[in-house]
Length: 156
View 1 (cartoon, rainbow, N blue to C red):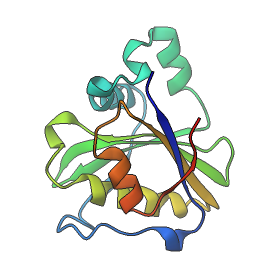
View 2 (view 1 turned 135 degrees about the vertical axis):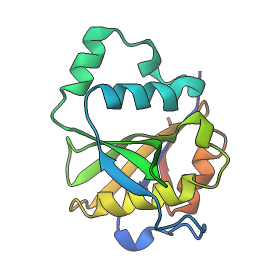
View 3 (view 1 turned 135 degrees about the horizontal axis):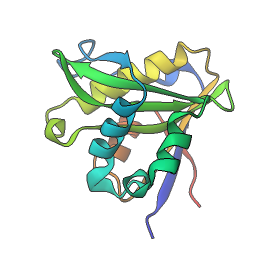
View 4 (view 1 turned 30 degrees about the vertical axis):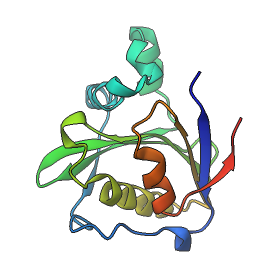
């Protein structure tokens, strides 16, 4: 059974922006429908995301959920990853899904993408940004969250 780690930020000043040369160059593009499904499947394929096994009804429910918001991370005109937010409990906003497409992993884009994602989330009048990561996620996921200023608040 994978180990979950819950992380949070409670103020925008806690964000430690990436110092990568790509910082400021990653953009967020709102997406919906099939684009969300395609990116979710691509990003989660190697990390046992539950969505990998969803049937059509589960996808329809997820994609029609009014509390979900989705963006593609874009660098140099190409899609590099996915950000999905759940605003159900706003001003506490959950990063529901975040990650790079497999072909962009290891290129130094994770930190800049997460920086842009968290900055944008604070711009939605968030008072708390939180997420959970799994031991099944990419080995650098937790390191990236901690480097950006997230701190653990719960481990089941």
